[in-house]
Image (spheres, rainbow, N blue to C red):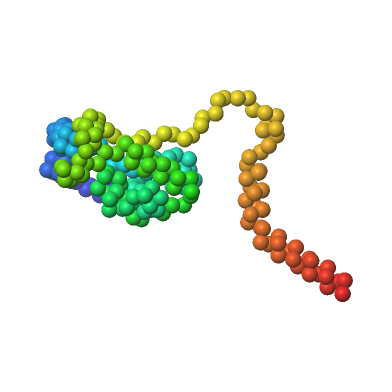
Length: 205
């Protein structure tokens, strides 16, 4: 060093006092597993999870994928002949905020609700009102773990094929740019057409 400064490196940071350990993670994992098993045994033969709707992921990038949503909308429940409060008591998740944006999604979730209702066994609280058939069906029912009605992938994967001559000639980038430009300038083009039409009418007069 030019000014003959004495080295004074500060290394006494006492890092060992601020280390966060995770040695209890295996024990917590076992505790969570035992809690899931105990809960499943307690609510048996009811399903371990609620029935949830099939929804599409947001944004253009992911909207081709169908996944499990938070809950069914009031419109979907009404179309299936259910009330929100009753649905919550028979293992159906309800979402008061989601809105239906398409008829296809509405119909798909209504079908899920109807399929669930066809398999549903509800025993009256009053034991005198229970029929022998319902009690027998309740005893023979198997508990469903995981999704009650799994969502099947609706994407059809095409088999590999050769590229056609017409596809080789076409340029997807140019097509998209042209469509984008036409959409952007649509108002200006219509305005120019109207002005030219008016000029021709004025010239005739």
